[in-house]
Image 1 (cartoon, rainbow, N blue to C red):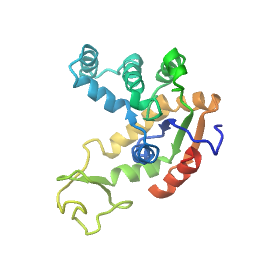
Image 2: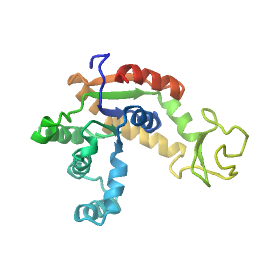
Image 3: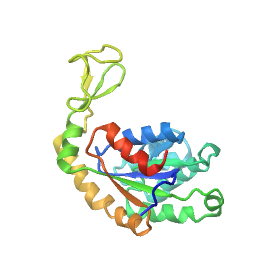
Length: 228
């Protein structure tokens, strides 16, 4: 396990859907002054770029197939080699598969990554039970006008039915925030992503965090581990 009282700056955030990776990644980004990247966002950026690789990725996605690890790692590689990321980075939900983890590991042994000390130094696993994930995801919504995120239990509006930020009264839910979809995503996480956990545990990089508390409580646990 990674040592405490050291500041970590090359971080992977792992956890099931709804575990708070995005929220905690944003907090870490602000506190450490680092960028957070998710594979999904980078792939969407690639498909919109019009590049040869982006068009290849779009064709794969449009056919409903999984994007090969090499394409995802290539996108991660391009970002991490940018000057602004040489001081560190945060990866949200990547690697998602054991194959991605192994391809990314080979990349970290390349001379550029070794010379600039870009190897991952901490993997944070946010642990939450399935019933908590369901409660989190099924209760969330966003303001249809300004996009501010809310949760009926964990982050309700101050005035019922009125957005705190813009005063909007229309709220929307993501189309895939349904019970059936969430159960399917959890099943996929256990079968596809869970094998990545022992991979990083064997490397001594993994630290587990109870992600079931309020955002600020979980953030404080992470702060003590990361060292900011």
